[in-house]
Image 1: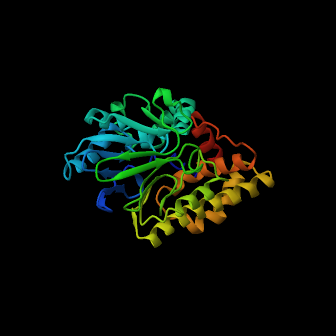
Image 2 (image 1 turned 90 degrees about the vertical axis):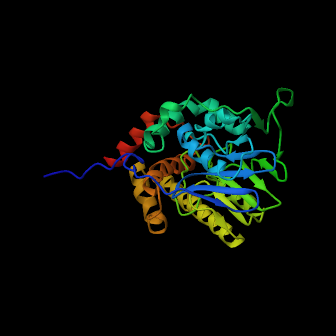
Image 3 (image 1 turned 180 degrees about the vertical axis):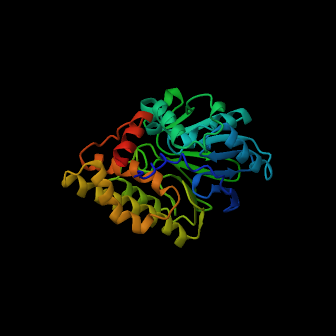
Length: 333
C-alpha cells in the first residue's frame, strides 16, 4: 500500500515563469507586476526616479531596470524598502550599481533587519527557488541609508514623514501602522492619488502573515483607505485602478486577516495543536481564498502566526530554515 505523496514545501514546486506587466497608472507612476509574484512600483520625476521594492535578486532587478530605461533615462536615485522580507529587498544592489544613492526604510524595518534579516534571507531562499535563481549575485543583506521614524537626526535619520521631490512630482513616505510587519512603509503620490502599499495590501493572491501584527492590521488598512487612493500597487496581484477597485483590494486583505485571526483565536481557545488549527482554519479560508496564487504556500505560515498571536506571542517568532521544515513536517504528519 503506497502512502500519499508528500506535498512540496512552500513554493519549491512553483518553477514556471510568470508573465510580467509594466503598466502606467498616472503621469509619473508605474506598476511592475507578475501574476502574484512580488510587485515593484516606479515613480519617474523630471529629475530622478524612485523604485518601491527591489525584487528578490540583482539579476531580477535588471529586468525592471531595463523596462524603466525604455521610457526614461533619468537617474534612479531612490529605493524604498516597504519592509524587510528578502524577496522585496535583496535586489537593491542592482539599483545601487545603477547609481542609486538613497535606500529608504523605516526604523521598524531596520530593527527587523538587525533582529532577523539573516535568518529571513536563508528561509526565503529555500521557500522560493524560482525567485532566487540568481541568488549568487546577492552581496548580502540590504541596509538602508536613510531611516524614517524614531531616528537620530544628527546621524542623518529622518523622523516622521519623508517627502521626496523627484522633480515635478513629490512622494510622501511614512509608516501607517503595524500590519504585514511592524515596520511597513508606504509611498503615496498625493497629487496623482497613487498608493504603493507593499504587502500591507494584496489582491487575489495569498496574504503572507507569518511575521504579522494581525490585531492591528485592519486599523492600518482603514488608515490607508482614508487616503482615498485612485490607484494602488499592492504587494502581490494586479495593480488596481479606480477608487472602487482600490477598495476591493483593501477589503480583500482585511477579510483575509480578520478571518485568519478569528480562526487562530478559536483554535487557541480550544487548545488545538497546529495541525488541528490548520484544519479548523481551512474550513473558513479555503472556500473564500483557496484558488488564489500562493495560497497553499502562505497558509501554514499564516496559521502558525495567528495561533501564536492569539496565544499571547506578540512579537512574531523568527522563521529559520529549520523552523520552516519543522512546521511543515508537523502539518504533513
